[in-house]
Length: 200
Image 1: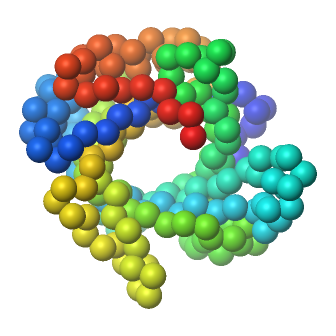
Image 2 (image 1 turned 120 degrees about the vertical axis):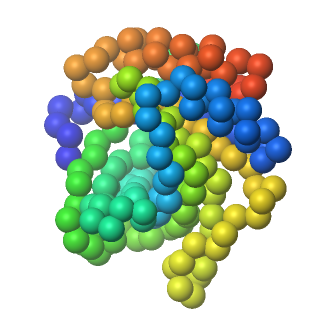
């Protein structure tokens, strides 16, 4: 995993109704360098002793495993999902400690071997855009069929979600500089999409 404990995920989030898809898609496309469809599987894990940790007043460290389903040879990415830094410190964006590792093979068994159990699973289908050092994800969530683990197509009225984040953990680039890039996108989307800090 990333070393030093000084890597951060810096992001803004928003959501919109399906009827607003076209103008938002157009504006993001016009202000991005590349665009591609995505279909991502995400599995959330918590430690075996998560409840005992909560009982002691400790917030357990969650893990997420992510894989791009549209790329046949894509590896799993396993990353920690920690509590965001306080809004007092970073009022304009979500800044959370982030450690990640690429896993070749069965990431789900790997997480289990680390002492984690599966808590939830979702699929995200939509688009990914690149704007400089940022990635803009725009997607609808799909639930997983409990019997087959396969995605159940989202209803056409399902809310669209948007995540704007640095493409890689922030190590060398100061957090403040990354936030400025995010706020630039926030300004570009003003009037169409409200991008904001998320505290979960």
